[in-house]
Length: 605
Image 1 (tube, rainbow, N blue to C red):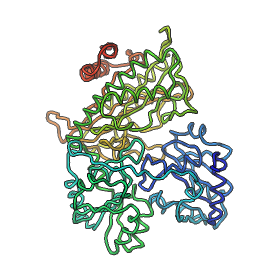
Image 2: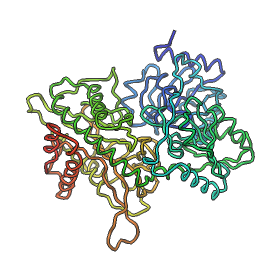
Image 3: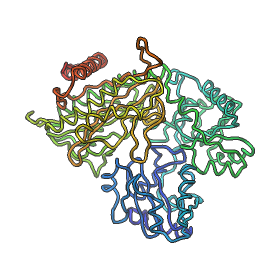
Image 4: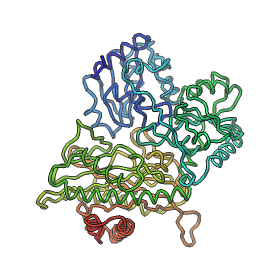
């Protein structure tokens, strides 16, 4: 019989821990590649606890259990995880080691899966627990896998080629640069375990992780230019083999651990953020010298070439037309009270599929009505789904995966009443306009080369801070090119929720989101998100190189939520100029009522 309740699953895990002579176990949201979004087979935390967020972890002992999440998920964790089974703890305020110390006897053995945590995490946690007499133990296999009876198998979908017409540079050129990096750093090999880095380096894509077009695999790049790809044989097609050529040896995924054991005496570079502890442990056991250095593909992947930039613009143009058609439909349909959150998300996907070569969504659409919009990472499902109330705010954060680009856009709109009389409150308009003012500040920012995203973050928050409010998420994240919708290393953020504000300097060619917000618990939420491209700014007599942002996303902003009296003349000009560009880009793709709606929404303020 399958275990249907989370109470039964927790009890089964505890029995498995007893069998292994363990006092506890740490359960992250992670896979063997430290991916943000993981395949169904790796959703161990959700299976155990019910938590559906993208960040957090559980700590389970034989008598106690706790869920650790940051400020983004404070409300969601209480909705999804049974408080009778798990205590709620916050990151970074609460320490997992301290929690374990207060609930475990001296000499206790706490298990962890070395394939799901970084070496740095394991070293730090072992030290913290060691100080209080508790031992951190790498398990043989994952105890949850032993009790998860209907655990899905990893995907065996075929990998496929990302053609040079979209990639803008061939794989041989990219691998040659990695070989040069290895030689200049006096390393023999580089372990690439981040799935999007492998996809970028080899110009391949896959269907193994929902919404992220990557193939489950590992790669070892050698200083002589050779590479070894470790991937399930079922995923390899003749086209893939031909594309990779003689310089890339294809080996089975099961051979990866053994290949690490072949590195005796060699200097091997492993990324500290994406290389799991097990990789370092296998290399050290083999007698290799492990160097923890940032994977050189990460920055190279983040700086998009002209082909990738142009592909993204083309994808955004199609995507913008689809989102605009959806917003027109929503404005007409939702005031009747018969549209629910799931139905709206499905309709938006329908419009996207009608407007071009959509391969997938780029993440689960955040379709959030009324109080749900106050949850920045709300994920609608059959249990949480509600009708969109007339006379309320609706927030939709969504994106598409196209062969030429990955999109991500948030629009916040006022849903009126059937008779057209309902208007947003002054508080709603005030907060939305403050968010818009911050958004404009980022969009218009000019800054010297060497500036980090963390240094720009305050520009987006200043008008909210003036009103004594803020938002508990970053202002911007990097975005891939038909790859991960959240792509490092660049971010626009301040230190919060256990994440440091980024110290990565911004370079021309990087994609970022620009998405300040405001959230009033149980009432409404606001976020305005466009994607932007870092580009050089030509300034007469400039002393040094200066950068700014090209806005890439073009969909009307909701005029009903803008208090024009709060905007400066230059801000009004920015909105009007933005809407002129929206009209010019989208009008040729729309007709009839959709075109009429666009013309009306893009009229000058």
